[in-house]
Length: 403
Image (tube, rainbow, N blue to C red; front, side, top):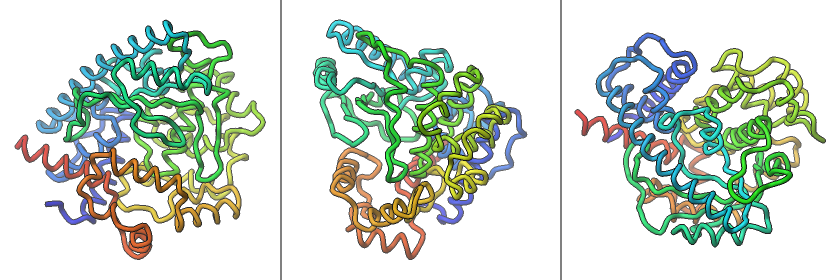
């Protein structure tokens, strides 16, 4: 059985913020946590994708904690090899078929040596192709044993024909490797769409896997992806770590991509503030000074004070109006509220796909209630997030089995 949810809420906040400080600047004293807090710390580490990084950098000596981190490191290292082998096959097939692709986010970070195998988990492989190559790319993936699972406004999801999700805490070496096929790099924040595809897709693409055109392009994508996650309260600490590490390789000319456009990248400001909060001196002051004037005043004000917990799954309660502070006009805010009251057909389809494909939602009666009832409940009392409860339960079970 779960502990009282208020206890879980405060424990997640405390452990998440402590882990964030330790990852950014390792060597803090061993926390004086009770047994439940150590379990919640494992839940937070798994949810934020930082267990293998903590295994490498943090010296905390707690037997069950060290065993958990070591196991996660081993699983991520072995799964990384599977992903690397699959990327080689995709590259070879794409070269043969004459299909240019860009390997995105985690694949690119590993390719430039920002992480060693085993340090950073990858939930799936993200690939960018041009609109006119999407059909050929889909057939290519099918030839590798994949089938289209569902389509979202952001991407097409392909899943392997063999293999089932492995239930448990954190990463597992046998978890199937899904592939997300993108034709655009864009995010809704929360209504208006920001599209940076032209920054990411190479001007002269070659058949096979292509790198990002520059570090600035890679940074832009990481920042936009993080912005979308902040807007939806689903940011992970590993996202901030990615940005802080890439920032060490950036020259001022690389940063100029964010403001040397028709419109400065106002959407990057909240993420940059969070990175600066946890990773001292990672973000040049001149970058924030250049971008802040373009950021909406309310969002700019809130961004200076927000913590990782508040914009991630470590915040236990659901938000009734997630992302409304990102609205750039009263019209957008009204549209955001209307969509929350009366979801679009597209939103309803995406929810149905999620209920069908996300194993952590199975058997949860709350998520299958009618929309009006769920909304009314969320507006009248705190409602816990199902993804957070899943990982908390997994952590409690994992540590109980170890004991």
